[in-house]
Image 1: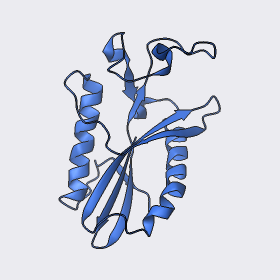
Image 2: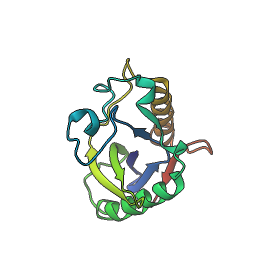
Image 3: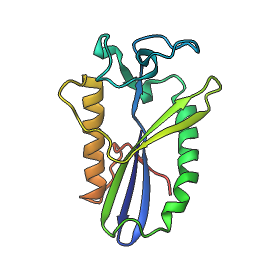
Image 4: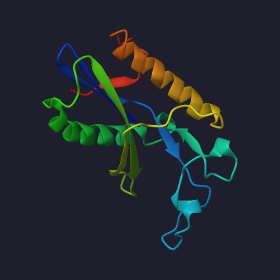
Length: 157
């Protein structure tokens, strides 16, 4: 899922993208299996049909529950950044956040990517289309200073 910090007219705005990717390893996970094939979900490592490597996060049957948990955690995490001067005026920074849900649907932040990967040639259409939409939504906010009803960035502050 993506997190956008955008400082405009000396005001920090924080947005959480409402979609992302559910990534899958190509082997079934068990507590006894420690091989990278069931631990890693990078599409570059995926050895099965790449179309089976991910689904849109918004298509998950528990999407609303998981998104609200992620959003709550990110609001708490972002409070310290709100009043900082780490971002110059009229600039933005996009982060990629990796979460893992447990069996009780609690979400756990496992990684923050400072420069999330863009669109790659070998990615499937699900990944490419989601990232293209996210980039258009990001430019609408950061370049054109507008958010239309189809924009999936959710202002959280």
